[in-house]
Image (cartoon, rainbow, N blue to C red; front, side):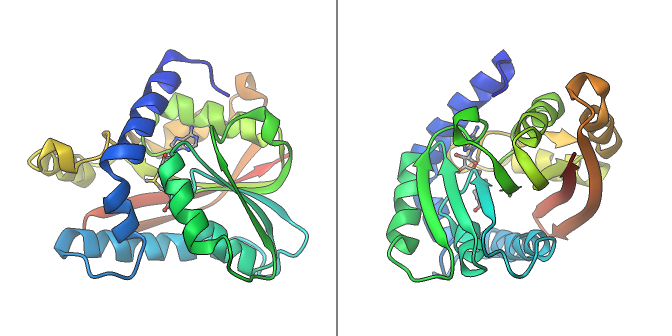
Length: 234
Ligand SMILES: C[S@@+](CC[C@H](N)C(=O)[O-])C[C@H]1O[C@@H](n2cnc3c(N)ncnc32)[C@H](O)[C@@H]1O
C-alpha cells in the first residue's frame, strides 16, 4: 500500500472520522430513513453513482472475486453479491463494517459476502477480478489515488472502477460554501482532482504502465459531484 506520509496521515484522519464522528450520519444516509434537504440530494446522487458503476460490470458475476474497497455500510457489496460475486467488503472503520455485517451478513444472495477491517490496498488481500471503490479515494491526493490504483492494478485481472472529485470552478465554489457548515458536521476535505492530470499519473511509466483508463462518467446532483473512472488492468 502507498507508503507516503500523505497517504498514512489521511488514512488516520479518515479512520477517526468514519469510525466516530460520522457513523450515525452514514448509517442514516445509507438507509431508507428520511433525511433532510442536502443529505437527500446526496443520497440520490450516490444512488445514481452506484448504478453507474454497477452498469460497467457484467450482469452475471457468478465466480468473480470482487473487492469493495472502502465499503462503508456495504450497500454496493450486497448488490454485487446479488449478481453472484464472491465479494470482500473492507473498510478502515470497524463500526461501519459491523453495521454492514448486521444489515447484510445473514441475508441470502446468489454470491457470497465476506467482511474485513483494514486497508483496501493491503497486498495480503490477494487477487481480484474487479475492484470497486465508490467515493473512498475522494479524500486522497491525485498522486496517492494514482499510486493506490496502480498497486491494486497489479492484483486485478479485469477492471478497477473508482470515483474521484472532479476539479472545476463550480465545485470549488461549492467547497467554499461547504466551509460554512459546522466543522463537526463535515468530513475531512475532499480533494478535487484534475481529470487530465489524473490520467497522466495513471498511465505514467513510473507507475508500471499497466493501467488503461476507459469509460468515464460524471454524476452531478446538487451537492453531490463525483466522477467515475473505469481502468483496465493489463
Ligand atoms: C465516503 S465513504 C464511502 C463508503 C462506501 N463506498 C459507499 O459508497 O457507501 C468512504 C469510505 O472509505 C473508507 N476508506 C478510506 N480510505 C480507506 C483505506 N485506505 N482502506 C479502507 N477503507 C478506506 C472510509 O473508512 C469510509 O468508510
